[in-house]
Length: 214
Ligand SMILES: *[C@@H]1O[C@H](CO)[C@@H](O)[C@H](O)[C@H]1NC(C)=O
Ligand SMILES: *[C@@H]1O[C@H](CO)[C@@H](O)[C@H](O)[C@H]1NC(C)=O
Image (cartoon, rainbow, N blue to C red):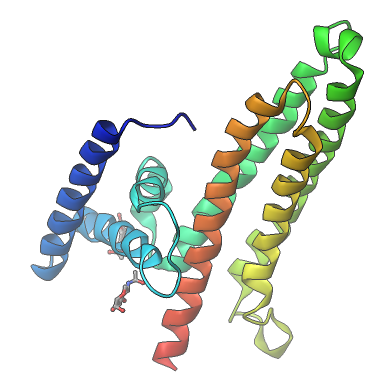
């Protein structure tokens, strides 16, 4: 993602603080149905930025990602939010398969003139394609957790599954690092990586909450 200026990120933080406090107020006063759902998102995004998750970037990314998806309005708990982010990540990974295909188009500059970048991009394409498949499996694991009796997924399987996708993103970044497409791919991979981090943190938040209640 493009670096935001200090002024811009300060403005964003202010907006989020305002959103957070109004969401908390709505929650405290019972709120309407819509306010409750917004407060679930804001509270979850605030919680993953604190102990013990400490997602390095501020809660803005988490909140703006979730609030821009209409499914968040129906979310009941952090499992639902984790499922939404996992699905958004899958859609982004699938879009990257298409983007790389475009970059590698027969007769295009990279395919004909830059064999090194082309080889790296083919490996990235495999990484992204793998992510799409893996995320479908993760989605089912997250959904089945606690609902399939003793043969269902164990708690550690949930974050571990999403972690696999982080490895794929890192692999791609590594492949392209000294090629002409390093910059383009780094920008895209940074967003994917943030989505994977948020998704994994929301899963851990869901698991922690579940443990607290048992
Ligand atoms: C956020 O953390 C607070 C304090 O630990 C907890 O009571 C609350 O349930 C958490 N919210 C979510 C959505 O996980
Ligand atoms: C969110 O909104 C939906 C309907 O829009 C409602 O069914 C659901 O219970 C709400 N969730 C929370 C946590 O308030």
